[in-house]
Amino acid sequence: RVCIMMKRNDIYYQNSKGEVVSLVRQPYMMLADTDIFDYTWKDGIRQTDNRSIKVVISGATHNAYQYALKRLTNMLEYDTTHGTYGRLYYKGWYLKCRLSACTRPASFIMRQMSTMEYTISIDSASPGWHKDITHTYKYADTTLFEGKGYPYGYPYGYNAVLSTNASVDIADSGLYDVLIKIRPNEAVASPIIRVGAYTYGAQGIGLDVGQVMTINTATRTIDIDGGNIFSRRVSDDMLHKAEFETGTQAVLWNDNFDFDLTLIAERSEPTWI
Image (cartoon, rainbow, N blue to C red; front, side, top):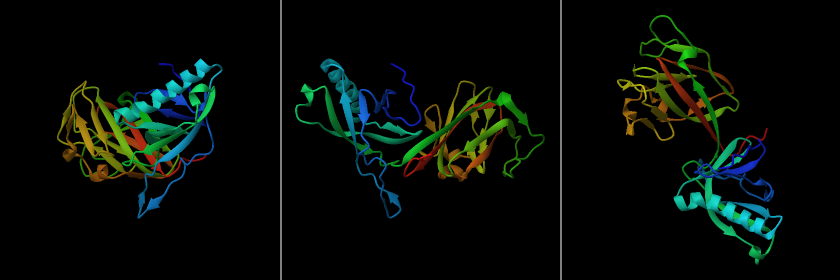
């Protein structure tokens, strides 16, 4: 696989296999005539109508042009044939979508340049534009609060850990799904993490070195070795999206484990600046 470094203003597609293609670099140039940034709300629900993009495909030779046609088709159709969704990116935001139709001009196969119109369908379960904020936190970088009790008044008593650099910066206020992957450095019990005013974790469970616990508020799951223990959630904060304002949110946790934290924003259109 060829690694392509994308710029922030690039529009590019990444399929669920991880293959990436820029739509604003030769041999593919997407036209400004598109409705991917349009949206409609009805009765408080964001609608999921199909969208279309027009892409000019060209090649220095006829063979190069045909190769470009084949490559783009293969990358776009991967998600269509596998029933998965890829990501259409712009300025760090992405739309979950996949190819549903393609309209080609007459005699396109005989040319060295053609404009193709692709129709894409949007993931109805998550139809907005998304942006991921991901950080990894290490227990080795932490400072321990002395004594029992949670510094923010959480009802359960335990030693809380605060990293000197444990925070996450929120550039855009709004609602966020939360994805956490916990990796213990030693056997731990009832791992709990606090992000701003929200608490995530499971009580009455143990984790051994090598195990991973994944918390996902979007799917309402707490997964360990393929088993969902969501009923053991430590709070009902995991039943809904977290609402964060622009600024810095403190991140705290209660035992010797590292973890990846991903905050997933969703809005009707990407931020333009």
